[in-house]
Length: 94
Image (cartoon, rainbow, N blue to C red; front, side, top):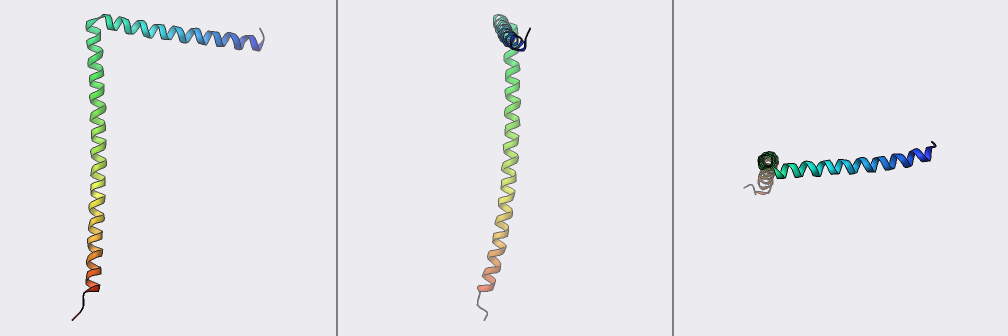
């Protein structure tokens, strides 16, 4: 078989394999949906996964807010110190 023939055969086999994978996924989902126990288990799994993702996101946001707050406090403190030194220099001595 020549190279072109192998390429064509490979393209067809890939499409057939992909179609079979899709069929298997649909069949698996239908079996899960038709069984109350399996569906309940799947829903609980999704719920736990969602809860974990939200908890992780919440912690990340809280950390970022904490870092931003500390940076802001530090900058405010530096500005107060700078303002104090400016006021001291501008204050008339008398």
